[in-house]
Image (tube, rainbow, N blue to C red; front, top):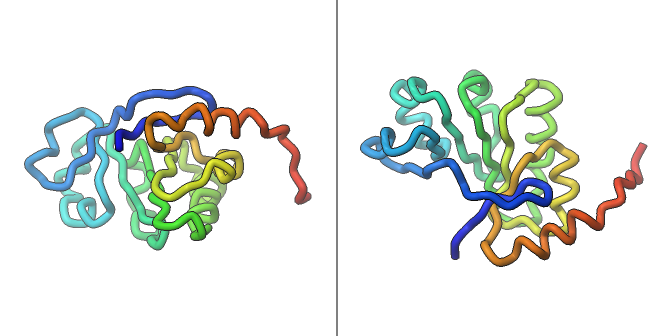
Length: 149
């Protein structure tokens, strides 16, 4: 199924080209890859200007903490919607590590998590094409109410 990027109520195409082998590094000015690929090809990838890394929800941002300033995009791939660890990791990125780049959520996320992930600092979401209206409607229902002090 084709994926699109959703930022609040705005739909866009993914500008980042996914790569998984070193022969593809020069295919696009904006590339994204899994953390394992970063670890194996860090020296070459550091030369690129717009790079993104994908962390699965069971991986910690501690894996990239020394290189955070090199990334223009950090994407959290939720393996299951039940795994809330990325909420904490995202909050740490914004609050403690002052990450100003784009943070994206993907994978098994639910529309009702949309608002809460936005509040934690997520900028964009990778969702299935054709479901954007439902997600946008969910986002617009948020009245900004916070139940916790």
